Image (cartoon, rainbow over all chains, first blue to last red; front, side, top):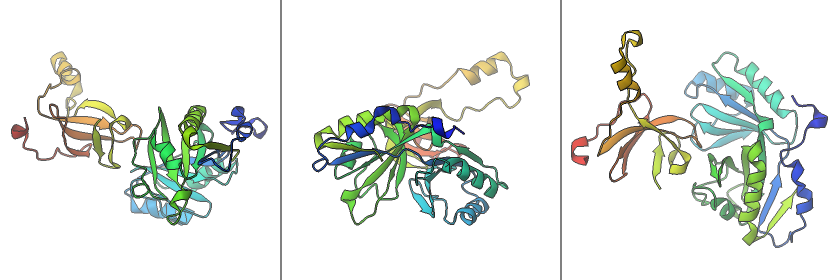
Length: 211
Length: 97
């Protein structure tokens, strides 16, 4: 684990606080880095009811088994990445969430053939929200992001501009204009994706917030 | 731009996938006994089909799973996709050619 005094978020060097001077009231795209989160990659036998049951007993909610969906409860959320792969997220901003979640999952799933990997430090997370968030993302993403196709709770591993990204839609059905997307990319793509989103959203007005 | 039906994720855009060549190439059953000609055939020789071709794809920017696709090499129509290890679907290959 990285020493805390050395730890910086992936976009710390960009001085995002200094970019937030745009006309916040008119901006229709809001960007923010979510700096510290837990991101654990879980691979396991997705078709084994005993494995799914053990996860549910330990976490209090069921692993999503339907493509492109997520589930959650308590402090964590599970995103479907593939038939045998999930991302387990803790986005409360706790820098120690990753190692702790990984330890808990390894203990709970010790009886199964699983791989539990803490990849928190290797990911950057950009939150994009506002009325034009969908339109901005759609410029660089081949996925159908229409509100009827990509609904709250849905997630997809896909492409965004020239990067690979995991896109997760938060929020709720009643207020589609309040769509809040969390975009996870590999840490080294974080700056590129941020700059791309800033450019793509420029016509709608972009405001940056620290978190 | 092709829309490829991933057996796990559903229809997705071609740029999320990578190509893996011809499907159903069987490794020699007894590798130690196979001669050079058998190895050369296994490693290098591929069909150059005009018509329906069974080929491998990997959803590299999505669920990262390999699977097989039946694609018409002239029209680019994708007739079926199925999981690796499954038998190819029963397609009327002659009439498609």
